[in-house]
Image (tube, rainbow, N blue to C red; front, top):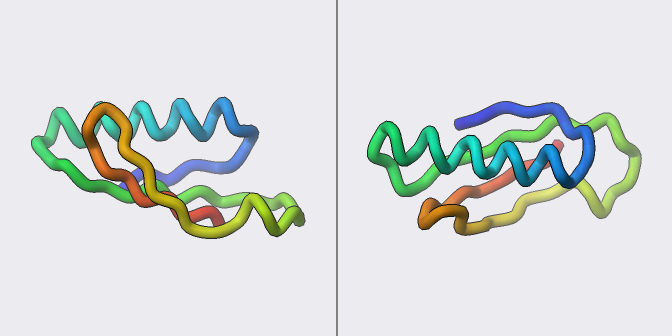
Length: 62
């Protein structure tokens, strides 16, 4: 599990890449990214899944 603070989409994508690399180092295929956001825009918050470098990552933005 990786924790991040929401800054913008580019940093979120970099966080996904970083987590995929950590998962590869530790031999895991599945991980979680928890992103804390102070934005009031509801469309940013929620749950999503993605595959990055062959690793399945579930992202929660709260």
